[in-house]
Amino acid sequence: MKNRIWLSPPHMGRHELEYIRDVFKSNWIAPLGPAVDGFESDLVSYMSVRSAAALSTGTAAIHLSLILCGVESGDEVICSSFTFSATANPIVYQGGIPIFVDSEKSTWNMSPVHLEGAIKHRILTGKKPKAIILVHLYGVPAALHESIEIADRYEIPLIEDAAESLGSMYHGKKVGSFGAMGILSFNGNKIITTSGGGALISNNDELVRKARFLATQARDPAPHYEHSSIGYNYRMSNVCAAIGRGQMKVLSDRIARRREIHRIYRNALMQYEGVTFVDEPSNSFSNRWLTCIVVDPKKTGGLTREDIRLKLESHNIESRPLWKPMHLQPVFAGCPFYGDGVSEQLFRDGLCLPSGSSLSDSDLEKIIAALASLFRR
Ligand SMILES: *Cc1c(COP(=O)(O)O)cnc(C)c1O
Image 1 (tube, rainbow, N blue to C red):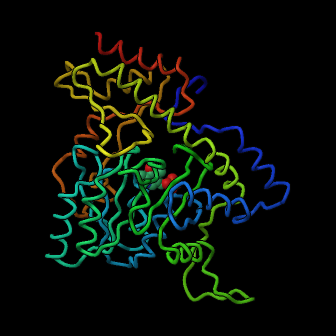
Image 2 (cartoon, rainbow, N blue to C red):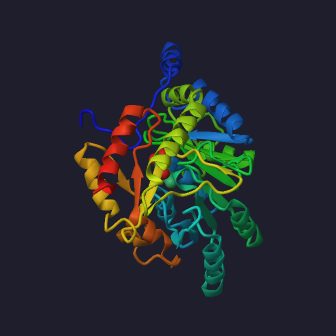
């Protein structure tokens, strides 16, 4: 594992340890504390939202957002199929049924056409979905205007999974701040990290207040421990929040570097027939969390994404196929799906390239040289 080039490793700045030292000095080694409050206010100002709750993971944030939408046993929730399983799993934690919707070709995110088709069909055959989870995958903003218009028209709350898209913007506004609630992740592989962590953000203070209550074991106000609802232990640790405060200081540098890496890959690979990238939609700004390529073997003389992955692996370079759509996962077999094969093709032909902001120019050259050797066979 020595000298391995990773897909997206953590990248610490200069201030994280100072914040951690303050935490140790004050002995706030606990969930909650001043660093958590500080991190939440950092997020509120960065995202331009009214409120944020720092949580143990992004998955926990999705779970709480579904509880706050009133999702209960037997309820249906619409969810992007092309995503990481953490988006969909919390639906099942609540006893709900995921209804998967395919991607559109342009952004790889949920197709508004299939979204509306799914809602209409669910209403016709049974009941109205309780919520929509819209994912902004790989840092690319989804079709928000269309999706919000549909969600509003059918009066279904929209939850934005912006776990991979911190800093991405749609029409000048941060993604994650459009829906009823947005969720963020600070897992080790994300654009900034708290080692593990997440947040629920909203312009509705009351929702965030309820999320904090549920995330701290749902303690009713009383001197003893009094509970009238089921709680969770989902708050962020004060130590992790200290890391987050330091990482917020370098977020704009991290985004700039990931975008630069994307540009370098594009310039180097553009010349090869059969290799394509997802474009930044108009009026959008992508944090370019991961640079992904789609490889069409019909145009590359038979070269597949798996050939490329194995070649990179032989150079000790990590790359990964794009997310396997949820409607193809054994665990979600039998869940309804609305689509036409876009995400299946992306999974078959797509590859994520090393994109970490700490990637050096010489490592990047090494990756590009390995790729070039394949195309110049
Ligand atoms: C990482 C990720 C999550 C989950 O976040 P965790 O903090 O790892 O729980 C959810 N959705 C997407 C799209 C992700 O990439």
